Length: 381
Image (cartoon, rainbow, N blue to C red; front, side):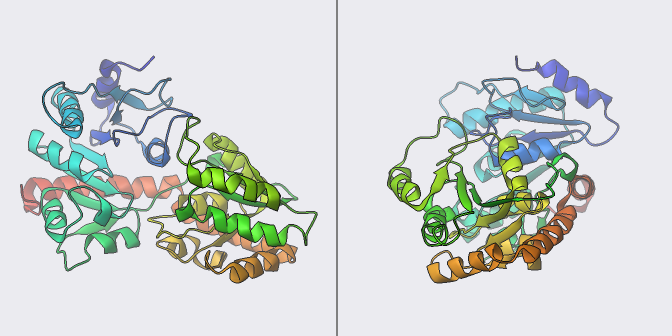
């Protein structure tokens, strides 16, 4: 059963800090087995005095975090405005000090109009230049005037201010709860692992092509792919997946489909090498960070923010240069001490993104935004 709004209001009453209402994208569900990447991050970052709001999940929401379901306002508005209207009802009841809206410029703009006295923070997890009401420089200029913009990486920030957009965009990286990650075994499995959406943008076919050349030469190694076209057990069988299945089978790659997040982390903790061969510019690179936190040796592409996350603890290869990808993987397969050293360095670097550190940065950022909103006049309606 979804907790009542009254329970969420009680969480606000008990806090001595800022009362933060965190708004999920409409498609996200705040529950185990239903959560996408943003819900998982929000679940890790939620602090005392915070209420998460979103559409009702099918099952119980994450335990230990106040959640209030959004009931859409049924009026002749667009779907997004109906959703924003439902959130605005909760805002009027709970009276938060700050609204943190994730990845939806259109929702942020709607709530800025509906709740003009409440500071609005827009957290961007993807390239804003491809988002509705943020594609053009003029649209991003407007967003920067009416909301405090926070990007999850320097790459996302650079995209927001591209084309000479004048805006203050702060960077707050995604985080890991290092204390809850599975321990690294003494002896890791001789396994290549791909974990993420099984789509061309993520380089899933490049992983299979590399394994086709590698596995026959190293029969004591195996390869797994965890993921589907999208998050959740009901992900569809796409033409890309249908075409990849026989190639994966011929290459000896096991397609394990969508798996719960804890299963993915356990697989990362066991595998010797985790491959993140993205073709598209990764706005952050959460799969790489999770693999680093689990102590795996990471092979990544240079796309987007991956180099900022992986740093010098991993190796890099172009997913569209098969010879290069194969060469890098063989380098690790044949050098166990290198894999071990890389895994140790990666885990050490992952501590820079630990929840404890990032949550405190977020708390201070919220305080600063509220102060600016109230008396510095930085933001304009």
